[in-house]
Image (cartoon, rainbow, N blue to C red; front, side):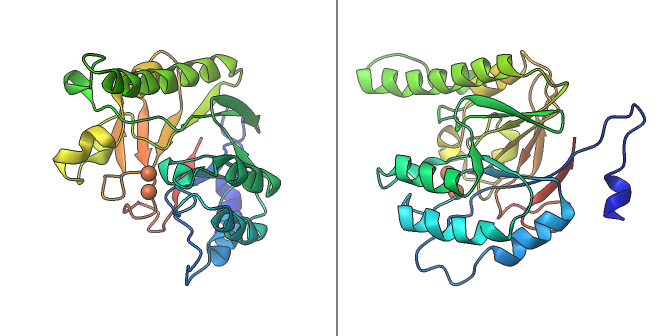
Length: 248
Ligand SMILES: [Fe+2]
Ligand SMILES: [Fe+2]
């Protein structure tokens, strides 16, 4: 059955099956491993996409545990880091460990696999729509907004590198409010930023995936119509599994 789905589309371009999942939060005292899940994903999909918060506290040991589990993954892995991966100030070590495990971590870059472009940035906070935080007042607020703008600019630069006709955007933070719906309203501004959606809508993208909002909603779209999926492990998905299955 899976092989049927993997067959070519009408125009002769092979459909890529992507398993997307975020917020693994691997911790040193984790009871369960992801090995069986990675084996399953390798049978179900062509590429695994990870949308950040791969570790719980950003500790190198946590990254090593994930790297060990990823040995059971036999398909390419592409991803971004999340805020939790920065917590211990060891993001370089975490990055190196995961890159050695052949995770293609993106932070403002684009890569191509099987004629599909994968563009990744972490993104940042700031809020949505007309209520988005503006650059006004104290330097600390301006620095926060500058970081949000910087992430959107990195996304734009990465989008410009894409030559493929199909593109998947990978984020940790949400680009729209629809897919954080379910979280307490009070924390919406900390779950993402519309600046990411404004950038996305200047390009043609096949889909956008993000995590971070554990209690959010699976599906939404940008004002320009790009499909957005919250693939945090905790979010209910049509696949009935912790990962989303997307065909691009
Ligand atoms: Fe998370
Ligand atoms: Fe997060």
